[in-house]
Length: 394
Image 1 (spheres, rainbow, N blue to C red):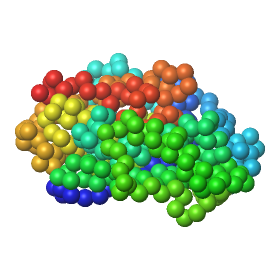
Image 2 (tube, rainbow, N blue to C red):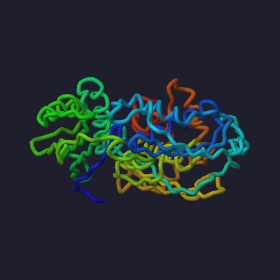
Image 3 (cartoon, rainbow, N blue to C red):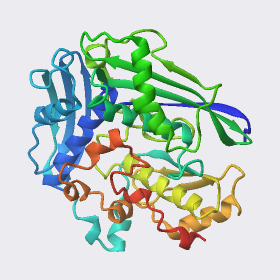
């Protein structure tokens, strides 16, 4: 394992066009599952200046107004009408309606073990879960810092720095020595402005230091020092931002959704899929297992790989790597994982109650994940982030 290196991760604020598309797609999933928990739905979104394109394929008894979903997501993000008007933008839909007979046959919470066994994966996927002890949330610190800066930008632009556009991007570089994070090498923020707003670069830098960078770092173990480079709009003013300037699409921020590139991920979009899609559901299960391994003190880093084939309820392959940090062998950790975790598709849906989470939250569940985080999200009770199996693994 490499010992000394510099690693960077990138995160985007909720107004980034790609992130907007993820939020719209997941809000569609929320709407379907809230009305009909047995729904099967896959939806994707693309947007550009003044136009949103939505493609959806579903089997459901629910009645969901797709243009209304798009407008309900875009509006609160806070673009000024000159930049992107949720009320009168064009929404184009392409809908494939499948027979309601293709809905889920039963609630996994009520299935017997034999019924779970006969519920196969309908897609092929090799997916990864990862955890490490670099942060209290057991995530790599570069992506945690980048996400924290991006979410802080979203908060302060609604109050303290109201001239910022909802579309901002953050990159954080961290220096590792002996495989441990030791210092922040650089912080880069590309901050868009609202329509036709002109801001003195000196004021922008002071505002971001005061309201974003310093408050976030005050809660972190790593600090900036005299060698840390802080770049604010390094290519100059960024007056054009959001869909008026660059397009977006569902699933293009997979690294930011997972581990910031520090660990492997399967690359498929997490958003826009109901729980029957193993390339979403399995990612959460793999993270759950890896996190419990690290939380139990069995390894400093852990990657769990699950491979699924069509027609099988369980993964055909489970692999574990601890990159030399385990206190027991990887094979023994794998044995304990297989003994204490049920990676069958139906069991994951059952154990996490994935069909019912949208109904448990008055303002939606899946639609909040792209902006707040699929992992290490402290505003939602994510069942796959719990560390309730540590004692069993020990």
